[in-house]
Length: 154
Image 1: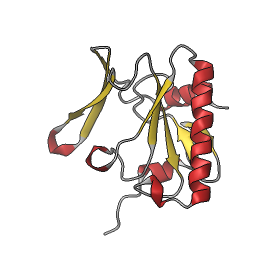
Image 2: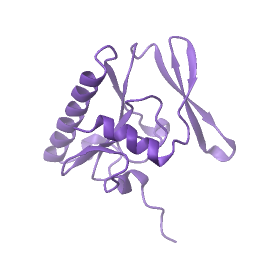
Image 3: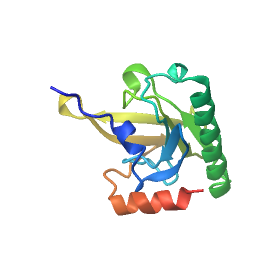
């Protein structure tokens, strides 16, 4: 029986949510963004940890990540972006990636909580910012994801 393809590997060739890509990495709007400007940055090569990437691919990844941070700073000057990654049991995908999102706070004020549905499936993300819970945008229609991505492209 074959394994289901990795969703992040498949996303490299997807144009709808794409913000920017280079030969070794890409940035895209996640399928369940927590806010406007939320971007995931993903290496093209399927690895679980960044140290598994060859130096040239790691360099290209960080170059793209820095370009995305600069773009978010340009679009949201009053909301400097946070960059974070989940590893091990907290990772939502078995593929290294980082989440970048505009923020009004810093890590101690911006917490991601997960609703776990029956059967161990991950439900909607919840953003807790300044002690205020805000539901994620949820199952965002493709048209909306494409519109969000188009505003972030560079």
